[in-house]
Length: 85
Image 1 (cartoon, rainbow, N blue to C red):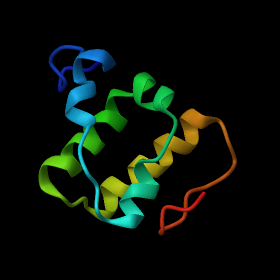
Image 2 (image 1 turned 180 degrees about the vertical axis):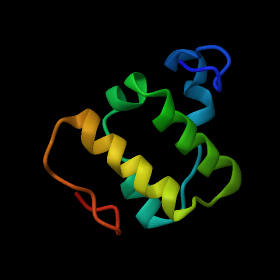
Image 3 (image 1 turned 90 degrees about the vertical axis):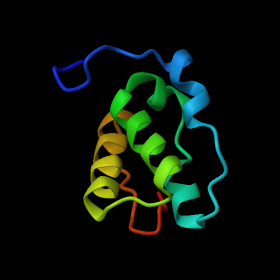
Image 4 (image 1 turned 30 degrees about the horizontal axis):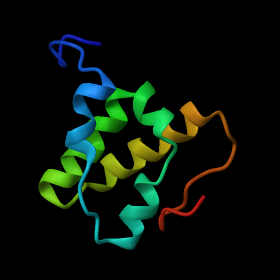
């Protein structure tokens, strides 16, 4: 939690905001990460929520999502630009 987020929102409270249809195959692959990572990171939840609301993400948002996902998953496996692991 930081001063920017204002107050913590638990995963269970925010879960309904993360549900939605994603039509772009690259984004489907990007967001197809273990549920535990969404539970552990409000940042990842926020990025997915922003995508579902706007239908797009900036390159910086995509890069940050990949970086945090790699860090939290503790794997050296990187996600490429097509969303592949």
